Length: 324
Ligand code: PAF
Image 1: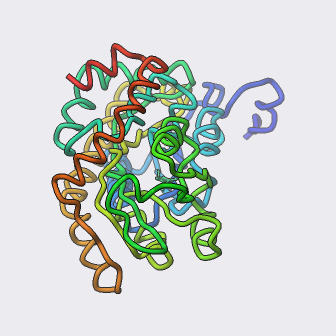
Image 2: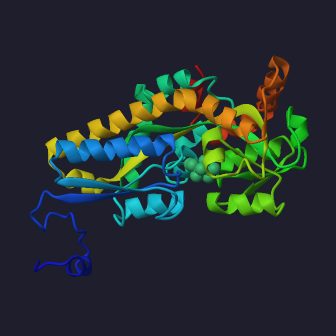
């Protein structure tokens, strides 16, 4: 190879800028989710379909378990072309495109079907397209799922139980604002720090979908769980825009349809995974509490002051459209 990546970098060019005439590619796809979780089962399917349909010309290497960094780092790495793909939580992406913040509002979706209906609508497409301004092509809406509470020291049933509680959150302004509005003490930490922070009492609890809590072993120190379903957390499958646009139309179509298949697979695996994992948590000695109707209503009502305070901070038309 006369032209090396180093030579091209010196001229401000990237490896896929068209200087090298080759249609073989390796896609590095990093994510923070544990290997074997439903998301990574979907991403492995994506890798298989791309390899199969391109006769091995395009290889997808999936790196789970934060091997390539945290979510924000990997979005930046995808933007700058250090890796080709990642799939962060929408909360992290709102730092790149503020219009996505509407999905960080609590109790916005009652169930996954309603969430999918909105995400798969024109509005959802429009929001994905907005990421092009950040050098990213969004291939579709994946899914983390509904976030629930897991505490180290007793069960939480109503919002008042959160008074003064140090809760690990993501570094997501709207999540932090909601927990503050009900009197909790949200403590943003990166995901790999959470296990030790729970063990050492730096935080009293954490919130995430059951599957992510369990596969990261957070349900060992935080084994009092409550099914609050307070935030529905979609993820977005992202690919570097320059790389994607350097591919032939046919290869782009292969990538897009493999991403669609991965998303269908993830959504269908997620339908039952919460119940299965919940049973495993209980079998391991954890307590999982369902809310009564009144308790659930108290949680929903607890978000009203948050909406009053924050609705004007986001794209209010989009927020209204979603709520409608
Ligand atoms: O809690 C988080 O940080 C996120 O839910 C996670 C686990 C990184 C997945 O997006």
